[in-house]
Length: 345
Image (cartoon, rainbow, N blue to C red; front, side, top):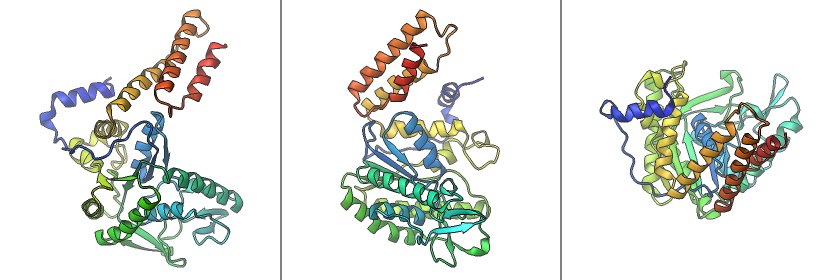
């Protein structure tokens, strides 16, 4: 069975059979010590998971997964405002015995209104702290279609399986997205002058209305991002995750069984392209050292109580401490605890 590395070595060998996406040198670097925030669709979750696993300091989707540009903009605004949700929040609804926020993923929902609000406000506070110091804000747009709640008049981040008759559905124009984001980015820059906004478009296809409507939606998002990068070139840039999926990985073997979501192999490939573009050399060296430690900790010995394995664990513990000295933001308390637990068996 071929590994990730094996498959991509084959891709490299036969690169005449793919269309490589040319990515210009990035204006921004993402170093291991830089605070990061990721907002948006499932693709933000996928990249965010890789970043967290590799010990980056980042907050991923404090509202849960958000798909459309207006809901993502509203999330940023609420964090900048220091918003606190209360019982009178316009976004709060009760449906079939559960309390939901129309701005939040279902993971925030609860039978108790108090618990629902507590979860929302805890993540809002945490997200606001990270946003105020984030070096990079990665925003992934999923769709240009929005749902507006007819009674409350708000664009929702999640419909929570309410009846379609509850909403008005429309496709945004590039101009509407740009008008929303220009003042928002200017305001964000006032609060956090160091922040750079890195836009992506999710390669996940939304097939509810057919392939043509999906393409119109993605084109709308791409046009809006292109205009934002043109208007604010020092503050905004674009990573072509969508194009990598469509061109470099133009084969159904890179799609899951639903034929919409990328496979783990496709996500790994896009992650590697992302790392090549944005990570400076010291961060790449850190990732290499951390991967060796991770592999060591995942090793299952024949004799876990033997002296040879204990020496092996002691060496891993020493390497973690040395890496921590070199990269102060490196948080390895869980791994150190695991080493000590196994050493004391």
